[in-house]
Image (cartoon, rainbow over all chains, first blue to last red; front, top):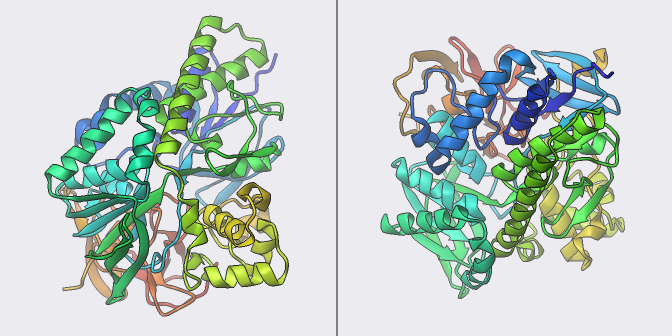
Length: 456
Length: 99
């Protein structure tokens, strides 16, 4: 009998539900999370001393957020919970965890990886100026800190988060200058039948747009960013072209932007799970089946970290992966529950197709980025430098291009520039993005003190 | 009065925390991240290593690593995931290189 506790990495919707499922089966998992409190990004909890209600913090998702928090608080006494802990390296069978400046090697026989996702970015000239943030970052400033990123804010990009964050800002009393969507109206309209299958998600989107328009906010589709202008060392205006090609200049003191989400796949990579290019998400993703099992025994994946499907799917996938782990341990599991979870996950996958079709990653933008645009904000590499290095050295693959240009070698390990760099290179070489390969991961997956590396 | 990047919209009924930013006495609120504390008192976290510009963070979720700041004792902290504390002395004007 295996009495080693399984490990869950991540305490967002997928990780929490996975942990609760394991506890319900009588196990006491170790739950490791980089954040100080459970919830992940979507159900991120406020620091002590903040007083907004669930309704004010999470809007339509208030009930879900509360249920998830309550569930986690209930199982807390039954698990080995390790908040503020970064898994900075994974070697098959061992996690290296950093907490409070000290690293600990933690052996595992089974691990459920649920690391979540981050905003997907395509740079535009001026995007590194103070005052310019990701959509997710803008949402955190408001939800987690009660702050707006500026006084007159442009929201730009595409995807459901664009409208949600702009709406949350407007509702909180922030100055929303405009909501500028790179997806064309026609593209989004074609996807409506599929979107309707997603139940209330689509209705909520329409509601946000109507509420923004009612407040006098400019809402435009099919735009392309041109540049952010600087005055006194911060952003002062956003230039863009509308769907008809006319250029506009909007005065602003902040910009929030993003083009959907990108999965955090570093730990799956270090666990030696094979990756395949996912044309829907335009990203290399670790292989897993609907149960969360991977080709690597004992390693399970759940949630947006292994393919973007949203919080509801993440919860279902977290439960399914935990049940797969239990099945593999020889526990009896409810077969009807397995079937119900898999049906629900398949339904969401269908809706996901429609969402990506409605709000596509604008790869054409990557092809058209001006040479002087900074591509890698860690290393200050411009698009022009990246392409020159890649061409001169015949780097027809992202890792070679990275080695020569340093793009993707910085502190973020390509989390920010990776998707755009691959799209830029593919466009310049006129090759499909899957031919660019993917950025290989090097531990530590995030910066850690040098002393920890030499101790370990 | 310094120009600030962030604006507080709510949750302002929290204890005041005093800290020093580039030699200037500043106030933040308990529960502020370093990033919030700095950007409600100014509009930068650090200098860019590559040009004469400033950086003020980007993702706020510990992914992009753009917001590492220096304390005057040489300690480096990621501003979006560290909390402000009484008496911290933060330096944004140094031109130290990357990690």
